[in-house]
Length: 199
Ligand code: GRF
Image (cartoon, rainbow, N blue to C red; front, side, top):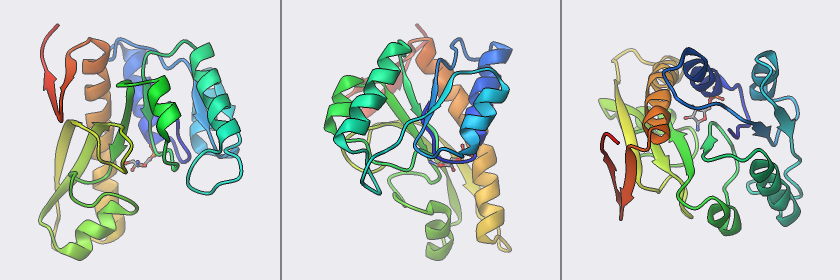
């Protein structure tokens, strides 16, 4: 799992793995932020956790960093790369190294409100329903084939904080469900569409 922030989605997925509802294990957590909560949450659970410097750019990994990330994930023999709040765009060579095996969670019902602070975008736009989306990662930003979505109603008295909180809670239910299906081999990509079928 790759993350830059608090790590609450990591906690949800690692918890589901420990409980046996996801038939997988988190082999390694990598962060581009040395003090990220996700690394601390992993270490508390004795899951290998590494800070890998991102290099000289602000929104992506530089070439050397990208090589280090790929090498670390390969050394941990990962089957799936789960992005959980990783704040950098992954470029082509990374995507090719794990083709069709990188997933992300985004706090809106894509394709609405890609990019930063999606809950603020939803509130500003005045939508009555928003939510979260788990999707495969492609070269675009929040644009890959959609694996699963969960809706969240926007309430009249919502603030950005209350809406963000409920979207976060929905993520913690949706992401483990999607990773469980991926681990069972039930999810296949057909062009832009993703099909769930019991293996
Ligand atoms: C989540 O809201 C996710 O949608 C976005 O980054 C946030 C990560 O939160 N991509 P956490 O670090 O898992 O708590």
